[in-house]
Length: 187
Ligand code: HEM
Ligand code: HEM
Image 1 (cartoon, rainbow, N blue to C red):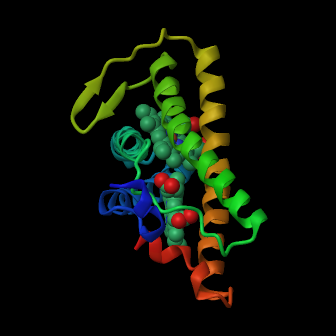
Image 2: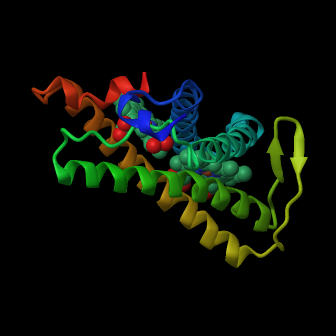
């Protein structure tokens, strides 16, 4: 696209809109499943037979989706520009939150993989029927660190998502200027 037409781009391209919502559903499900499964009693059969392997599979899938999305948006000339009608501090906050979310949706699954790979008692990294290679050396001291990072960063991501969603809803339902409605750019 000719960059001169940039001013007229008022929505994200279809591929990025679809990926945004697929990824949002995956990450919301993973946050819920991670929280739920770690709270289950070890005696509950579904904990290690169902939840753990499927959490790992969907977690690796989420990472692949994010990498495709980052590749598609990289230097993409058809992305909408930050809305000029938003206050400067709102544009800055939304940019910082989006960048931080991008960083965490890559780092959190990598920490999950590293945790599973270093744990001496791990059942491996299950990916929809295939056991992925465990590239890191077994070491329970590192496992504890990766486990802690996976947990803390996953809940930090949840905090950012809540802020992100609150911002999108505020611009749609609270702002009096309809030009501030960022949500229509993602629908
Ligand atoms: C965006 C992707 C992911 C998100 C948002 C996510 C989120 C979470 C959350 C919230 C927990 C619960 C932490 C706690 O309360 O202790 C958890 C646990 C866990 N996650 Fe993930 N996860 C993701 C990807 C992965 C991946 C790719 C793997 C492995 C390949 C993985 C492996 C695990 C394991 C093994 C646990 C249980 C840890 C324990 O028993 O203490 N996760 N995850
Ligand atoms: C797990 C949940 C979610 C994650 C990880 C997430 C992540 C992101 C990221 C990284 C972007 C930047 C897109 C880019 O420039 O490439 C974005 C944009 C956007 N998201 Fe989300 N999102 C989530 C859920 C939601 C929900 C539930 C809503 C609506 C209520 C929403 C509304 C938007 C909007 C409107 C934009 C475009 C903002 C703009 O044009 O400046 N997102 N999201």
